[in-house]
Structures are given as C-alpha cells and as structure tokens.
Amino acid sequence: MKVVGITGTNGKTTVAFLLRDIFRQAGYKVAMLGTVCYETISGSIPARITTPGADELAEMMRETVRAGGTHMVMEVSSHALDQHRIEGIDFSVAVFTNISGDHLDYHGSMEDYFKSKSRLFEMLHSDTFAILNRDEPMSESLAAITKAAVVWYGLSSASDVFGRIDSIDITGGTFTVRVDGAETAIRTNLIGRHNIYNCLAAIAAARSLGVGLGEIIASIEQLRYVPGRVQRVDIDAPFTVLVDYAHTDDALSKVLSALRPLSQGRLILLFGCGGNRDKTKRPRMARVAQR
Image (cartoon, rainbow, N blue to C red; front, side):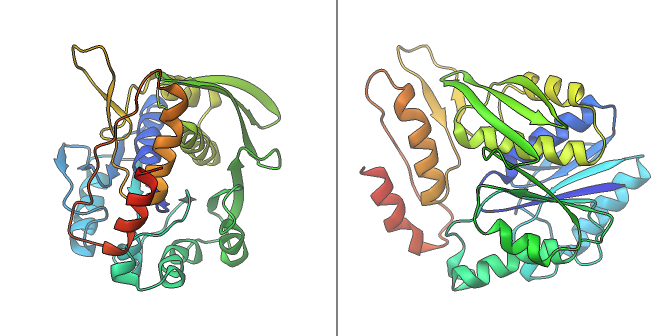
C-alpha cells in the first residue's frame, strides 16, 4: 500500500482531500486520516485528533490492506511525530506545506516544533519522494536532511511543479501549472492564493506516484469544497458566508488577504481560539483581525 504523509502548519487537510479524490479518480481504493475524519474502505468516523495513536493507526492500516486498499493519505501532526506514533510506517511520499507558529504550548519553541516536523523527512528512504514548497524558506532544511528524491512545487519558476495564478474570485481560482515540460490551465473551486499552493502540492504528490495529469486535473476541478476550509454556507441573504478553520495567525491572515480583494462591501470577521490550547497565538490572531 502506498502511504502519503502530509505535514506543515496549514493546508494539510485540503491537500489530503485533494489527494483522496485524485487517487479515487485514478481508480484506486483510498483511505484518509486527518483532522476532519478517519476514512477507511469500509466507512468514515469523525476524527478525535489529527493523527491517531499508534495502536489505532495500525488497526486502521491493517483494515485498509485487508479490504484491498491501495493508497492511504495521512495528515501527520507534530505531536504524532514527537510521540513516535508513526514509527515503522514506510511512507512512499511526504508533503510539506508551510510552517508558522502553532502548538508552542506543547513544543516550547519554533525550533522544537520544526524539528518534530522534520522527522517525517528523515524517515524517508531513497526510493521515495519528498514534496517541498519552493516558496517556504524552511524547505531547504528538509531537502538537506532527506534521502528521498525532492520534488519542488510553488509559484517560483524554479519549481518542478510550477503554478501561475491567472485569476481568483469568490467562486474559486484559475491557474496554469507547468509539469513535465507542459503547461495546462486548471480551474479550482477552492478560494484563495493559499489554495493554489495546496493544489500544486497535491499535483506534485500524485505525479510522483504516477497518476496521469488528466486524472489529476479532472479531480481538482470536480472538488466542490473541503469541509471547514473557506467553505461557503448556503444562505438566502444578499451576502456570502464562509467558514474556515484558520487556527493560527498565519492561516487567518491568508484567509483575510484572500477575501478582502473579493469583497464588494464590508468584510466581517467572527473568530475564536477554540480548544483551550496554545494561548501564545491568541494576541497574534487578534492583531491580524484588527488590521
């Protein structure tokens, strides 16, 4: 079974949903574990935590293999890496989205937080792939420590999977992707510049496992939304309501930056810091909100 691990502060869930649908489009039997839900071949249950404990994770993987599963897409949290929940898993692909302040109540420092994230890439063998964000400076550190073949994605022209944003509006975005020497236009229903990055990460991961570009594009264009990720709420009113997870100051800033140019009137924000977790990010989120 091919196992794809996704880590980073923001974007893990969206990349996981994109890859789940891409692999299904390609005809594979897929399981997905992450912040929203745990999906095996037989069904889906709401997630308690992003990455299950080692025993529960092993049981889900066993169940997936017995049911004929070919691919598993897994969000890998810094807690899971630090607590060795994923030890012994042979990842075929590891994806890095980005890094910003989060879980400092647990890790104590950004250095320790990033060190935990890095372990996923230290685990990779030479016949695997590390999918790294070319526009995230910390990616260079991951490229230096991994044995895997590195595939770069991003809006930088030096990327192996290069994206150029053509347009973004309240219904989604259009971008041109250059991969394997060819350029193709793609329309996504996901809103915002940050979601173009998520699409590029998914494209890079899927291509590294041999999925055809046509199947990838069809899947991206068909995905209507990811639960709680700039998700439109159907409401009979002369305004648009969107719900987003945005649990860090960086995530909140990216969502607001994406929506401000698309707002014809007022942009009203209602946010909180649920979970009784990292209190250090609350003042930073407040500063973002008052801009």
